[in-house]
Length: 394
Ligand code: GLA
Image (cartoon, rainbow, N blue to C red; front, side):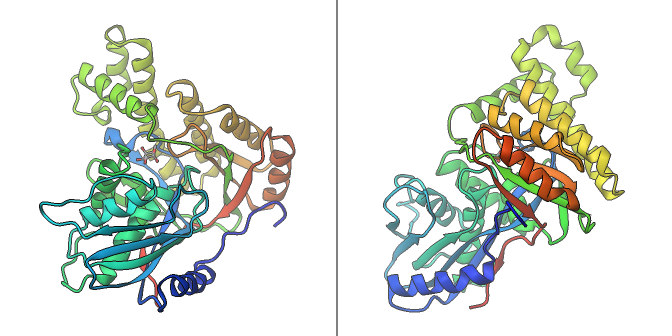
């Protein structure tokens, strides 16, 4: 389709990675772990407030190929573009009194964090990383690397010990919290582990229960538009938003904003500064929008779904203040096109991508219109809901 980028298929990526592994290590890899990026349809900045999120896994994936070694040293090569140098790292297997430490290059922290938090037996290994997930694009390149690393380690682990998918997601979240030191919620790792082809997943981030909602209408498309303005969430804004939400919950006498109603928030308005009040108003309204949107999608009510997406975007922009000029522009341009139900920023914000729900026959004209009028250079992906993490047959 004109203007839409093709996502390299994992079947095409895998042989390339195997060859590159061979060039680096002088032998063929024996195992491969694969995990997808995600796009969140609605439910933003709600996961760390015990709320609901509604993401789907993408066909864009990160893959680790490699094999066990008995050297006691882990050697990892990345082929990802745009990551910091060096592209090869070596580290000794962690022991009880010598745990791994975060450091440079930044990309290696995702791998080391997972090795440190892996729940079974880690052996030393050689590995090569490849990815089709745009980095810093708000579609969870980080979680896909963590979950792919965990899945890779599972293939190497001969101890027979397995953990539940929930524990796997939690271990990967802890890796991200402890190593790159990004205090993320559970959404990205959860969907990367549990995504299902043709479905979005309504996740209750308090109980960690989830419900699949079918996304199979052939006339409906999920379009991801990358503003190509990179976001960086390890800065101070994301942790600040978390703190403001926790502060609001405390003032309201709640464990989390999940337990608060809009009436309760309003009756405490005089005890909250304006900014904290607006942060809480976003979260409380977004949690309600997310379950409403999942219901709407389940009954194929795309126009209600679309309206909720736009409300979500406006709330993220005005009350939560995590959008950007470029994201606002992309949403406005998409919404001015015939056949578009809804559009919003997706992920943590401050750059990255928008997600748009539209009719299939409107994709080409929408892409053209947005591309022609956007102040930057956007990249467009038509996304199918895909499966979560898996081992790949070599
Ligand atoms: C990032 C985090 C997630 C979530 C989103 C915002 O992607 O990793 O845990 O908080 O931002 O919804």
